[in-house]
Figure 1 (cartoon, rainbow, N blue to C red):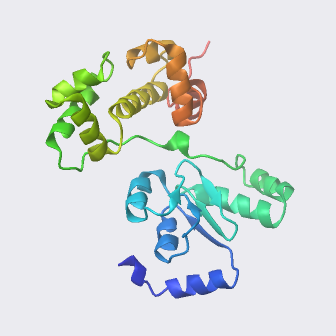
Figure 2 (cartoon, rainbow, N blue to C red):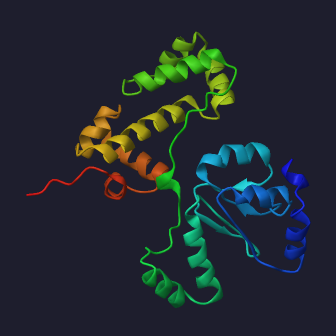
Length: 240
């Protein structure tokens, strides 16, 4: 088990001496196992967030944040967040101007704040509820259609209230939240891989109210659809 690591006493002794400790990516698991994240806020790689929550339910996790500073303990998110962590440490222990000079010398953008735009939705199917797993597969095929909770509950062969409870227990998501995630992921894929107009993308993933979907997208992904396309599109822009 990780908690038996011989390195943990050294980490605790360093913490007791006032040393600032930092983790990157899943390094937050090490700090948690060492007992150093009690009453602290943490972040980790977004893909490991569910595992972190299951293992350490009493630690407050903010996986949307790329960097969390508790004063003496700093956690950084996904693997390349070590760059952001380094710039932050320069800013904290030297000055913002020195950190800016470093970023220019290393040809780096300014320190990122969130890892939300990089997060992808993975449907949680490693559960024992066959009826709910059947619905998840069905939703992946029918998400663009106009759907109601009653429609989806019927696919599961369950009453609406029972279906909502079992779906939440199995997936950690409400049925509506799950459907929204599927639609957002579909929209992200189209923004990455096509030049299709955003209004048409919104319609194609099952939304008639473009303003509502745009608000949902920005709230979930952390940027507008246009900003997401500019950052992640791998389609060569059309030339005049």
